[in-house]
Length: 127
Picture 1 (cartoon, helix red, strand yellow):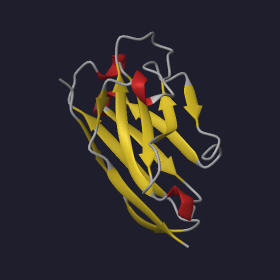
Picture 2: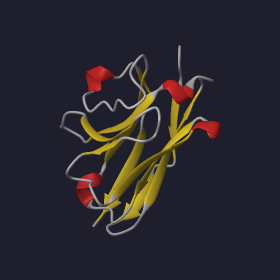
Picture 3: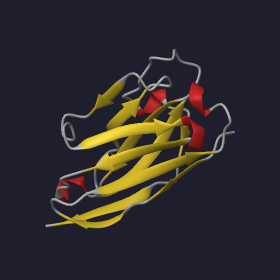
């Protein structure tokens, strides 16, 4: 069983930057593709960004391309989501997810492709 713990969410103004982080409990973290999803009130959970186990493949939702950057530090067993130029529509609970048993270059963009989930961290952007 893998535990994922998100932290670093909070409140920001439109145009500001925030970084959310996700720490994993597994020593085999480097074998996991990782992703960030978000869910706003009254909406379905949506894909935000994903990174392959190797770190060489990245995927972003169109709504965050050019503003958000996903990265990972396998030594710290942590994945990050740097969010720049935040918009009010980025307000949501952000979830970290991990997927194992895939190729090193695989990046999942669908929630069902992920095996482990964190509890989520709230990000609120005011206008």
